[in-house]
Image (cartoon, rainbow over all chains, first blue to last red; front, side, top):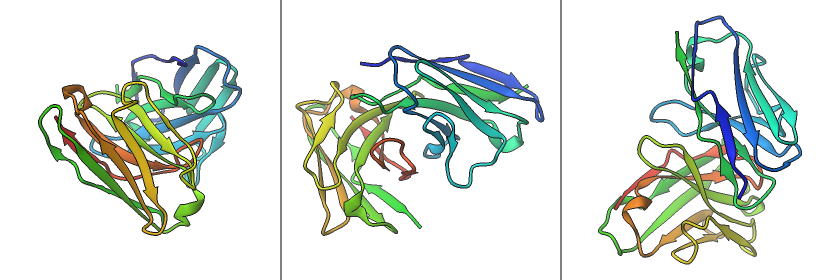
Length: 107
Length: 114
């Protein structure tokens, strides 16, 4: 099973600042990686797929990068609605696996 | 637009069974693979199972293999998860999600408490 390790567990950021989230993967997954955002009481929402392609209606302040085993989600200028938990997921192998999440909180 | 609605959750004793359903609308259901993903209270996301668009293939997480069965009825645009031998650690919100790779649409989930 592929292990996904996200860091940091919690990121404290002020509105308007940049946030950088990391996802490290235990095996090469090429670019078969997605990022999701989840707010309390809501279902996850797809942000990024193919490591760097924004999903439909996702603002340009969200960007993804990386390939192989190291991936990054960057939020260029945090808005109030961006404070949430973010998960990476690999879809290169079975079983599909998620990272444990990074909580982005208001500083 | 795409709409996924889970149902069938509830409180059940350990060892018992439960069947979840996911009603799909707003897209051509029989052309998409579908998944179940769960989330224990206060925890992260755990992938559970997938079924191919035509039901020809399935995969399961090791934690549910042999106990859970994913199926679909394309004539009813509905996805199912039959859960047998439920354990306390199966307690979670169960989401259905669309897509073979990334999950571009999710339901709101149904809570199963064991």
